[in-house]
Image (tube, rainbow, N blue to C red; front, side, top):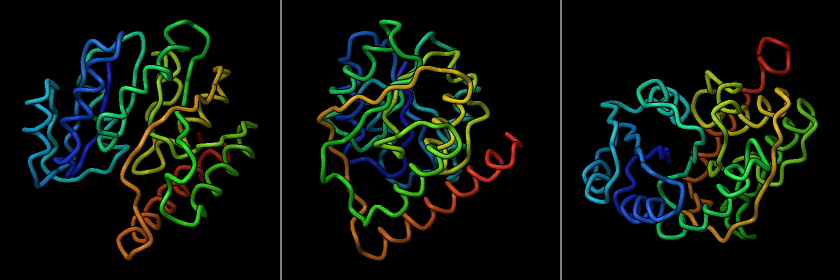
Length: 220
């Protein structure tokens, strides 16, 4: 099963869903519409996804956790952001090592130049993963990941907001899961260096800090 969090992604979610449905081993695509005000839900439905709608934005982590409580648990999960478009088909390479039993959690790494900022939040997340779990993450913020049901169980409840990926990697490594990173030719919408981009990264950094804190002091 592929699980796709989405908010106001009407221009790309249909292509993302279609690409994910074409991946061998993906029997269903579930889009979690996190309070979108555009046609995200209808476009996802038209592309063949099951859509779970949240009337008001809950944030990425909370939206995903709510969806996990509402759907059946498959043996393997595939998480993907809604803005990948047709390049989401490349996630077949991320799913493969998990389906083959070679990894418990596989994380996609993007080609160079995909980010839109200065890398401060990314470096903070990578440093936290290294210090708290001993894992060197090249792509600590990647939401594109495949994992076994047991690996996901070790990470729940998942962190709120944009702290979900950093916390998930820390929790999985600490639980003894085999975590790998897989380079894939993905493309997504960069946040850029305008006001909106910096505001997004500010929220992202705060969410990551809030996810790191309980893990740093042994409360998680």
